Amino acid sequence: MSLQDIADTFDMLGDWEERYRYLLDLGKQLEPFPEPEKTDDSIVRGCMSQVWMDHRVENGRLHFRGDSDAHIVRGLIALLFALVQDRRPQEILDTDIRKAFADLGLENHISMNRRNGFYAMSERIRAAAQAAAAG
Image (tube, rainbow, N blue to C red; front, top):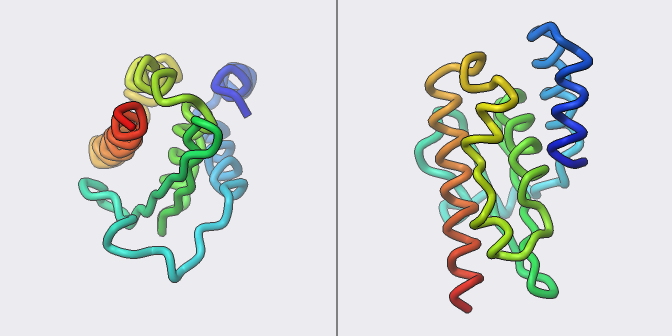
């Protein structure tokens, strides 16, 4: 699912309660993240909820997996992955994740703690893209 698909659905839903339900549904579609792989290396620091994230590079593109113990955060992970999943490192580095977050209106409708967690996840992704770009 692309960010544009999510934005179009957000526009169609209108009501924020419905948008939150949609985020919850997006989170349910995340690729499984097995319990044994939820380690200190995969935990994302800076999130109030427990968040795990990892990635691998396939054919020069980054593929991410993530999970959280909070349903709304799982939805935010899915939203983030819509921006970066299976893209080349430079494409990820060129993506303005904060702008996309704000354009969806989430800046004003997600708590400060969730927003900070979202930014911590996006920094983790950015670091992975920088490392992959550096080789």
